[in-house]
Length: 115
Image (cartoon, rainbow, N blue to C red; front, side, top):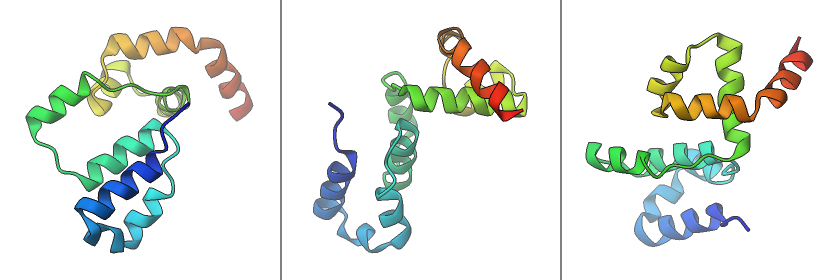
């Protein structure tokens, strides 16, 4: 079972930063917390992090299948190298290559339907 991130973030904001709940953009983003990518982006937008905590948090990040496929499709669509994607999203090249191997068949199906 997956945690209810909408409720978790709503409660955190209500208790610690009620002024942020008045922002319509934040309310909209709060309602769209469906993928890991959405949650990470929302968290970055709401809470400023130090460089040290960003480095430490990067080691603990996990991605759901939907987000992994989305990143791989984005890479294929734009022809970006694995090194570029690694730098842009702060994911190791090895991890991206492992995703490619794991989802090779699914990526091929998506690419064929896009043509």
